[in-house]
Image (cartoon, rainbow, N blue to C red):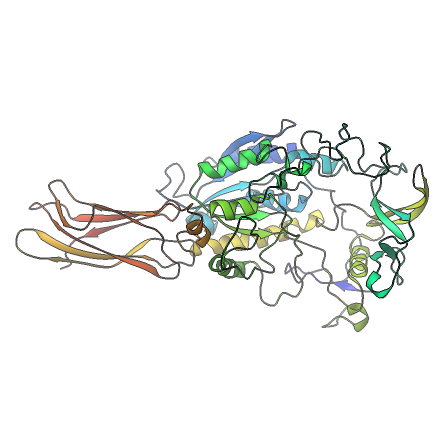
Length: 551
């Protein structure tokens, strides 16, 4: 195989001129749940205005922490309607890089971080601590109570496990006439699906390492745990799916997150760092949503496209690869059922675009490589021979002669720990860019004139939102989860309203100059203070304007 140099275009990261295969394989260097909890507690002890909120406890007794970070002007006295941003990481449990980026972000935030000038920040670096603990012990990302996935009256009796005693759970090639898989002709270590439409017959099945321990002629169908956190939220929750739980929000982690969001209506936007992604390849949007929708409404999809400019430049060639939308996931519940705009990022995926040293473009032979070949070339460049275990013959107790080997877990979805600071910098960049784009209320075109000598005044004022985001998403309006803007005319003692309303509601202000004019006629007592108008939003701030005649 020819020498290649991988490029991290998607991250804006520069690889050393002569990269050596000495990166640490994930999960080396990653923090255990107890270490993350201790780090958060230390941060709160260092920052007097910060708070560590325990929103719940995992099934195995680990705290579920949200770090509350106010800006200097909000600490101890938050303004009415001050917006909040929620960052949640690693709901799946095996996206360790996402959790590390969130923790690293908290550890490097300064008091003058631009976002904190505009909004409160809620940060949850580890949403699924039990699964993380199991992943770090090589057990996979299981969590929760045992589940009878195969409905045979037993639980957790038949999961993937190390059967050849090498201390790791890999893959099995099981020779099977008409199987789905073939060895890649150019590199027999790799597997690809047989092209049956072209008359190609497969040679083996590809299974996780394990055995049919319950004698039902199936392998690995009932492993440890079983209820997935990212299948337990209400939107598109699947009844009768063992992985989804006995009912919506049956798990303490999902219930705690939902309760936290409901208790904080000031949350106007969320950034979810996990396995799905709408920033690298933003959705086009749909005209109408249904109970099965996974694509945002067009107006909100346009917002995502605008906000993503702080994340990835138009020059980026490599894409971060997210996974398909799962039924019952947190981000979809936030958007479709609460109307909160959600940005999702998988943060990192192996860079596949390769080129020779000093070449501007990949060589033609590199372009012809399959995805698996590119992955292996990248892995060898970064990790040497540590990423892929050669296939070894093994006599399986029920499957006969097979081979065991393949990719080590985690490395295709998690970066080496040394890249976390650079990924954190990128996450900081988009959070910094959000502040000036959050909806803002501003009174403009204020005109007040005296109508006669009896202290009667006519006032007109226009409420404007000059920033990018509207005061509510299109989805919040569609599903009636929005809280209207409240506009109050405040008269001094003895004042009397003659025309108009003392209190009015306004459903929504569009972004980028959305506006609405208000009109009043009122009478004030002699030598009184001027009237004023106040606009208040649940999560777009407050704006107050004096209504006095300009000299």
